[in-house]
Image 1 (cartoon, rainbow, N blue to C red):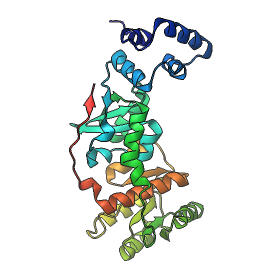
Image 2 (cartoon, rainbow, N blue to C red):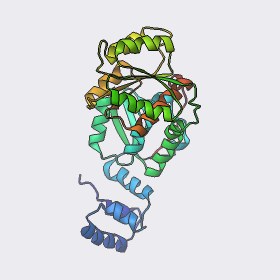
Image 3 (cartoon, rainbow, N blue to C red):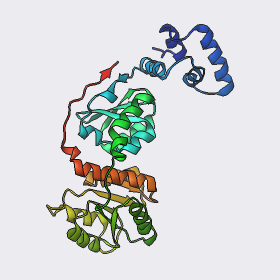
Image 4 (cartoon, rainbow, N blue to C red):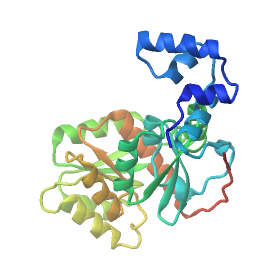
Length: 290
């Protein structure tokens, strides 16, 4: 069966008139933009209309009101806030290794494939408006990233044998009020972790004497340090490497060179999660599928 075009669906649902459609098609030929974008720029349709059309055109569930619902913490933990914000996506439900994902662009098959590989889950896309996704991200992710944490007295251990990278990370964290301790190899990192019991550990993966993975595993063997979140840094920034690191139990993965804004967001999230114990929580979730 041939898929109906966006214009036909809009006409059938009395969202636009034939005259408006013809005018938009003329502009589309000139500006080479998607029809939905043209109609939105002309103030003829709303983003809700575009979402509805995508749902009907490609037989994808249309989700609404999820920003008002309680989403389980184990579902939220699947994605980090900056990934959700960057790609305009939001995790809705996790069921039998299937991640139901609200997407402003549910036709982005490359993103779905990357996430599926990275998370080890099958991604089931749902179309949602950008506004609804942004509201959910603000409620569940940005609130935690911007949470008013008193950074004074919070200790962070940074382990990296590259002097420039070590100092750059230290400078960004000290500026935010964190107390930073530095180690240049895995053996010293493990010793300092045992002595300090820091609130967070950030470690490069390739290290002298003992690499970051060996250090991480040694830390996890200490019951009194097992719950300290550990963020991995690596110049090897492939999706396979990130998946491998996260599967080991690292809290997060950041590719080198380190972006200061991204680092701070991940650090705040790690400390917030550790303080609140959010990964152990549970809530009910109800949202509307259309």
